[in-house]
Image (cartoon, rainbow over all chains, first blue to last red; front, side, top):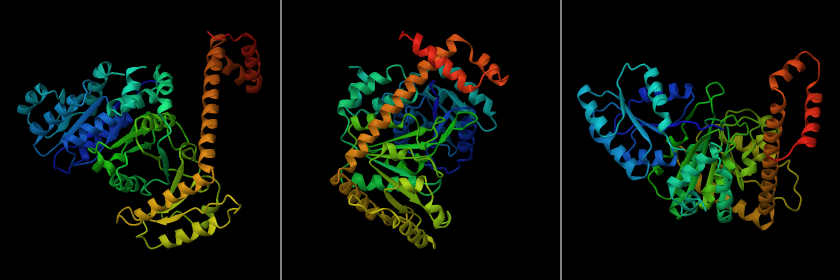
Length: 134
Length: 319
């Protein structure tokens, strides 16, 4: 059987608006990926452990509360510390343009803001899937 | 020994996770990995948890993890959800109910997509159990996909099967039917806070009375639980452990585990033969050409396979 791409969709922080996360999860499922969804209000530690145990290739973080500058980089550093060196991390939600370059510097490789066509997310995954480890 | 096997035996969660991926993806080193960790297997107890979609399997698993952690046992969960027959993708959402344990070092949760396998588990589940066993988890919980009437493979993987039922699934005739109703060791009537839960229990008990009661008969517990209200879980644990104790005393547990090995050997044999035979046949002539011949009624499917199987036996040499 060929390698299947596994993606964790996670919601750190305290907001409960998960329609975006669910929409992405569903669309990625329809694109043929295995999506692990962990629900709302996850701590960075829980997201990191889930990513490691599920051996995912990508982690997509969704956040609408404004705490992305703190929580997204924390997830990245925890995952790196736990040995998830090759896991590709991206984010989405209500994120001001000014914050995007900061987040990219911190290892969040792509940010998808509201209104992004789902095709862009799939293109991002397809463009980077050669980097994942087996 | 390959490094991954060593790290699995040490119980490193990253290694355990990667090993399960190797199994799922049929990695070229998969068989060596299993060969190397196999001597370290055999300590874990495997509970299968099955039942219809939405019956509360994940929530019950969540409560079982709590209880087992309280007595210091390391717990691993394999939660299977269906793959899409159209895209091959999947949404694996069983973790949601168990995320409270995500940061507990003594708990390992892995979601698995069925990847086209039809028995209620995935084709990789039986080898994934070996990895978790070798890594030192005391209890392994296998949560199947939401089942209908015929997804019964969890029986072949588990020491004990907990069948989770809920009110509203039909009358006792449904409970009388063959299939999934026959594989339960422990019957769990979940959502006991609902009005007609007592009726479900009565129907299950009524059907269980029909079972032949010979010398080896061990009564199947019927337990009422409410995962929502956290009720009946202690009773469920007690009854399940008691049941396991009893089947162990009567030698049924060992028999079950040996039957599991027999099934596994058969599965591996047919898998390997199928693969070799298919490669052999398709090397000779394109399968499409044969389909065309059969379609044109120039030969029948049986004569096609028999003819090729004969040549296979005559000409086949292991590369």
